[in-house]
Length: 215
Ligand SMILES: [Zn+2]
Image 1 (cartoon, rainbow, N blue to C red):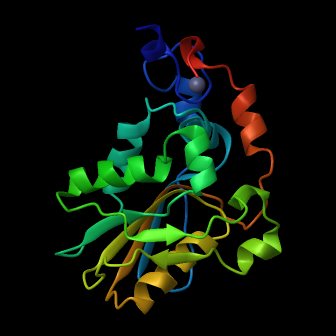
Image 2: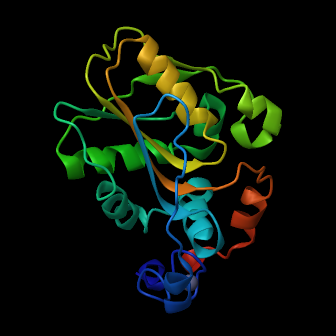
């Protein structure tokens, strides 16, 4: 089980996170929630080892840190009674290329921790992937809608892996509110405090050595 003895952020030998990476983690501060959200929490600042850790989940399907992230995220939010958990879906194209949707993995883990249902309430237009869109395009909003036939009369917690501009969460909140949702909260694994473009995320994830040679 060589892979379990590598740091989930830098790939050096370690049980889950090596000491330097663990010390380098920074908590995210969400000063102003994206529009339409009643609550918004994020676990890690998307920088340094926190960014590497989430990027490994996002781009390499490296799931060793998944339950660690879920535990931390679960503690951030008081979930209202009767809530349901959903996620910001990735594009169909990207999902078929990667074979998984990391936001869905996090949402399912969180729903289990909280003991509430998890349901795919949101659908998105399959436009350009977020990281290939310009900052202006992102600010104009992400085309998200509520999946037909899924009632949204309960409080909803929206889960995503990384918030950069907050446009995805705002788009999710707008769609859910339009569907009648009484309360929308969000929790993400990582958060970029200032809305900046991060076009090199994938290149960075590729440069990071795979734990135990796995991809
Ligand atoms: Zn490390």
